Length: 367
Image (cartoon, rainbow, N blue to C red; front, top):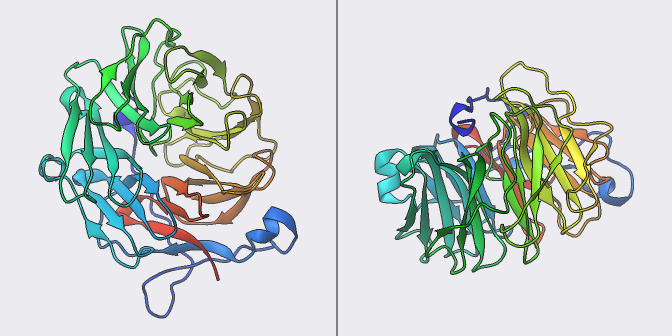
């Protein structure tokens, strides 16, 4: 499975730390213009000390104050004070078994749904309604052929999770009660997978939704890196080629972000350290029916992406070698700062968070 093969990239040292040692910030060089680029002048990631060394590939930004992260060793953390303090709310069974929690979706400070990945029974869904004090396992995969990668929610009730292909098609799991129960959808509306095609459990963003019914699935590993779109909550799908290079188990689309049901971004590349990732980003203006390569893409593999709220064209992309920003809806990208992150998420109030290896979590702030 592609998800199982993901390597741990190198940690890139931050530029400088503040005098108190509790956060590290960066400045954007040259962002003195007007418009959305000017709004990012002096912005950068302020690191929030978690006290953990887990790798956090799952992230849910509720607002500027509240965020959840999920990762290796069955670890889940939650903050409600902007990252000043973190509470370890790891599900006991997940921590004891060392499950890989690669995705988490949170509705607020109390309710969240987490996905662990792996073949067979390693793929599970866990849910909390009390801020992580207790967790309930609501799904455990019993098919040894299935390997779940990502999940997404349309609202607080309706959500989907995706598995790598089983019997030649991606498998979709559905809930209509907020993750309390799940059912596998029929695969009759799913196109056949390409040989070697699968999803990447790199950032919790291989399956994303926008609005009440639209959902997109990113793939790699096959001859082409494709993006599949469903307008009816996973019942029927249409595939399109992204233009991001594939043809190898380590290459493809790793993350999607949709500003609305028509405007989307895709990022990816080759996750192997030192491997070139030309054309690591693409954009769509028609709900994913067609994808256009970015004219000036990020310079290396990127595993996560998120739109900045209340902007027309500003978005972030993160990966092991740094963070990039676009202000023209993905046509061109420029470096924001160095530093390793795997995933990024922005809340409606403008609070943007990023997370990655060695317990690294940051919030976007202006100096």
